[in-house]
Structures are given as C-alpha cells and as structure tokens.
Length: 177
Ligand SMILES: CC(C)(COP(=O)(O)OP(=O)(O)OC[C@H]1O[C@@H](n2cnc3c(N)ncnc32)[C@H](O)[C@@H]1OP(=O)(O)O)[C@@H](O)C(=O)NCCC(=O)NCCS
Image (tube, rainbow, N blue to C red; front, top):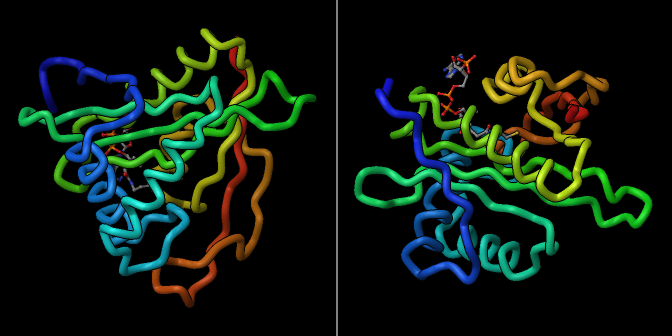
C-alpha cells in the first residue's frame, strides 16, 4: 500500500500515441485477467486501441475519463463516466470500464478513481450513477462498499472471456447527495 493517495488525472483528449497504447494494454490485460469488460479473449492490442480511439473521439460533452499513472508516467488504471444520451435523463450517467492493470492492483487505485467520477458527476449536475458488474466480482464488492445499491441481478447477462460461459450481472445505482 502506497503512503500517498494516488494522483487521479482527468484524461484530456486527444490523447498521445503512448497513452493510447497504454490504455489498449490496460484493456487487453483486463480481458486476459478474465474481467467482464465487454470483450472476449484474446483481445489484440490493435482492436483495443481501435475501441479506445472510437470511444475517446465520440465522448459526450459531459463525459470524463479518469486515469492513474505509475512512476514511469504510464497509464495503469482508468474509469469512465458516460452521461445518458436521453434528454429526459440529464441527471444520469453510466460508470464504465473501471480497470486497474494487474501489476497495479490491490494498492487502492480503484476507490480514488471512483471518487473522481463522483466529483465529476457533481460538477456536471449529474446526481444518479448507474453501472453493471459481474455478480461476485471484486468490482461488485467495490461498488457495494462505495455505497451503490443493488437494483437487481440479471441471469446470464454476458459471457465470460472464454466466449462460452454465461455469467450473471448485478445492476447497481447511486444517488449522489
Ligand atoms: C475491480 C478493480 C478495478 C479493483 O482495482 P484495485 O485498484 O485493485 O482495487 P483497490 O486496491 O482500490 O481495492 C478496492 C477494494 O477492493 C478490495 N479488493 C481488492 N482486491 C481484492 C481481491 N483480490 N479480493 C477481494 N477484495 C479485493 C480491496 O480490499 C478494496 O476494498 P476497500 O476499498 O473497502 O478497502 C480491479 O480488480 C480490476 O481492474 N478488475 C478487472 C476489471 C473489472 O472487472 N472491472 C469492472 C468492470 S464492471
């Protein structure tokens, strides 16, 4: 555990080629680790880079990408907040792609990232955060401890990274005071 709280940074766009590569490696590492982050294994770095490029090029004006860098300034953790598209949900945003590289896990990076998401939400008049997670995952436990409420469980919501095994998802929400 580090003595100092990690510096969470708001990632400005456009991002450098080096940052794009590191984000791709972070996503590929999460898939390799079996995490439920949309993709099946193996995820090539080119495909991961394509996904990040498309996502970062089409961000909602009130969206935010938060990252943590290691001592060598390499991105090792990320989390995104995507405001709802719907005009009748100006107060809601989805939390996505909360990922910490396996080399940096267990050092308390995820919690400050999630708190940065909450600050960003408040600053942008967003008062409701929603997300889904694989039931029973570390992420699920993290969101519970951060005060997210379970809306329900959806059986067989997605496939494990093997592309074969269905898993349940928890849908959770948090109203910001
Ligand atoms: C979920 C994830 C982001 C947590 O990142 P992290 O930086 O290792 O987490 P932290 O060190 O900040 O720990 C967060 C909490 O989880 C707990 N935790 C961390 N690793 C754990 C483990 N292996 N088993 C059980 N609990 C664990 C910590 O005790 C901590 O609890 P606390 O905040 O109440 O003290 C990381 O495991 C990850 O990237 N997983 C793969 C991607 C993923 O599944 N993302 C979610 C998609 S919905």
